[in-house]
Image 1 (cartoon, rainbow, N blue to C red):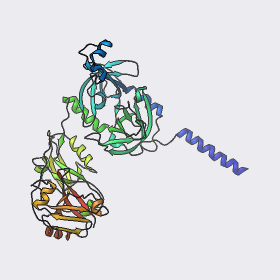
Image 2: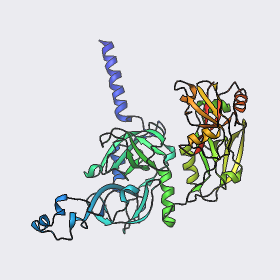
Image 3: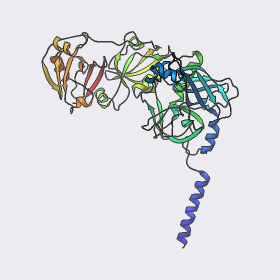
Image 4: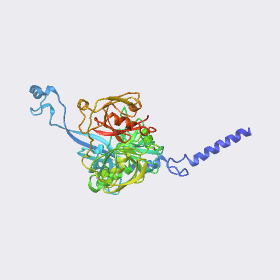
Length: 474
């Protein structure tokens, strides 16, 4: 009996402690008090607005019966109204936005306001304003609009770089046009690129995001804006637990540029970056997969002027470790034009720092080419790969540019390491282990070097009209 009473007392004490202390905070130190979800919602919801847009389009509807003058007269239609062409329709769409300053500046997605003839901002059914577009940036899907109002409830801007996978977040918006809604979830992943935007470093969350949430707020448990809801991955069109938000650190840099001149000036390096996989890391002697490989340095660019070379691995920019090409592109593009960036690179097994003065991104980046060669013998000195010298006949058959030289890949065994690493039939191997190859003799000799590492090749791919690097385990 005493044992049961003791056990009951322990259970009640534990329950009392949980009731008083509450669950552990989702963010910050473990001893920090947890905000109620209702407190977070009350603080942030007034800053999130509903956005409706009108766009006037020509009526594209066509009815073959209306080609007949008799039917047009029968239905009382004028003869010049063939197919109903010339009639205009108004298309309506809904989205969300976030007030970022008391004097009326609001951020939303570019795709929410793109080509809109009229933009209406609604504060939870209380008051409506017509908005003007200050500027848009399609590459990041960020837009800045403004309404004529003062003393608006501006949201607090948080540091999106401080987010961790597993942190709790709340999404606020106007899903399906039903009205303002909040949903809870966690940060599922960081630094996502889903190829919907040219520059993306997206926050992935399982907080329910649906059509109409676009442009709405993703906030942390301190009630700070850490992201702007932008996209979902879904087969049904509704939330399936994979939503994406643009981080505030990216969005606010774009906003400042739009405020200043209505346009984003982007810096650039002038290189073609490539992922570093395990085979590439092994070839370079890296302890882990890190950085990005420079597959190409374009002519007359900041990279070429600074002395960057094809085959260099960029490990960090201004002290920030680089994990993938998308991250490199984002960091460089959001830097100030004229900024002298400090790049830590790996070259010939040694780490060194290179300073690059960044220029403004031109309308079009120019690519580079190579040179030429000949021969016809086939050989299999790399397991699963059949190669052939580039004779004039082979070059003509595969329609290869005259300025490309190397060894032609005639066939690749689908089960080989080379195929798994991405080598394809039709590729032209230009370098092996840092050595230029134009004959089978060159190719065989280069393969005999650095045999304790993967075979590292620079390969021209005609479909891409550029060269890439491929490392193949032996």
